[in-house]
Length: 179
Image 1 (cartoon, rainbow, N blue to C red):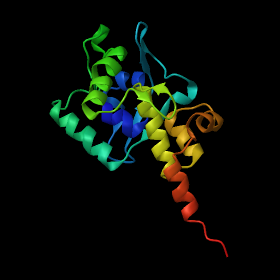
Image 2 (tube, rainbow, N blue to C red; image 1 turned 180 degrees about the vertical axis):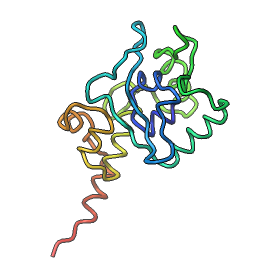
Image 3 (cartoon, rainbow, N blue to C red; image 1 turned 45 degrees about the vertical axis):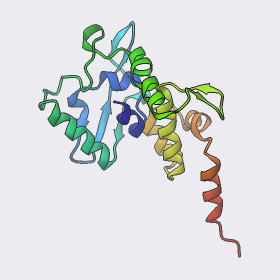
């Protein structure tokens, strides 16, 4: 779940609500996001916003990851949750993702919870920010990223995620040719 969040930018509630029927791993591999899970409210029949209902295209390594997980899970029916949990209705508790998964992983990796450059605490949502930063630095167009992440407008995507690293800015300037 951690890796899928990092490599797709999906929100935690979107990941929690995913079923095997939401995957297309063969032709134009993607994940269909059509609902979300909100702790305390349960499964929501729609995504966070109108734009949140989307197809999130995935890389070949994500296809392999999900295909391996599908086989390891015994090829379950399309309506079975990809990430079942111990919470209400068999869902993963959103609070468990940070406290039970992310924070222990950060501790094992020797990474501080407080992100020094920004002074903000790392949360599960930080994986979404990391995905967006990598996508922008990799050259994805802002409009494409907006659709991939399910934002209503590209301005939201730009305002929230366009702060690229100094290393990426230096590399971008390094390719300029002046005559």
